[in-house]
Image 1 (cartoon, rainbow, N blue to C red):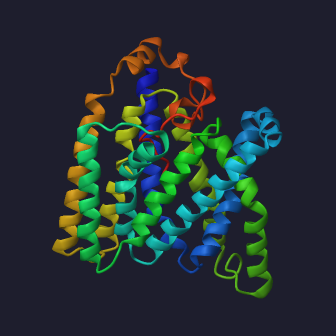
Image 2: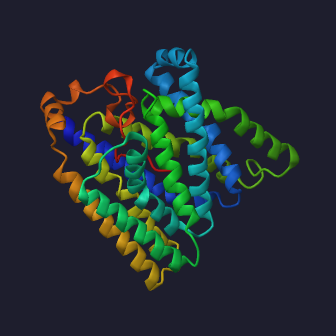
Length: 331
């Protein structure tokens, strides 16, 4: 199997697992969203540490611990991704999976806007069109939901902010997650211990299956990320950008066909505008994927790319942060 095909397989596996994880969190509905979130942080650290131990990949950690700037950035990233994870779990477990899907549909458009605001990027007309259509879609869905879709906007902006912060950190996804969960381990474990001490926790009081599902939240978080990291070294960013839409499509289908959420015509109309925006966005991305710089990189082959791939690379030439790309790691 060629490296490109192997990368597509890893990438498709990662995004399919992220999509299927939408069905995982309702299995933990007897726990509150905050308890699920803190268990996810604790067990994610355990899972990531196990992967790093098997790979004997620890030398990078010393450099991170010696860099207050990197630790500060990763602390910010940990806080923002915690918000994203929490909103996602709360949305899915409260019967609003369609809002979660909307959040990940509009996330690339929010990232593009952040690229303009923070990195002074210049958008092509098609990109402006996609962003404008995204704004129209949010307006339509605000009417359809009877209020601002806060879950969707919160997830989109928190994840885009997470991507923005990660532009300044030169770690791959697994390394970054290890530090982020390490930084959040003490408060997360403290909250879990508090719940268990007061009898409000569900770790050992519901069923052995529930306990295993809470522990498994770490695997559900770490395994797709590991596959994503292997895909990111082998396939172009444009392909990753297209693969990411697998997740919100699956989430929308789950909301409609599995959870039977209320989707009146007005919501279908709003989502239709979102899908048109993403079609414009994806078509423009494909049309411009073979720019001169990318063509040179492609001709050099995967071995010429920096370790960790373009998505998680924190800096370009001269140590300046690169602009946001469209690749994402869903909640």
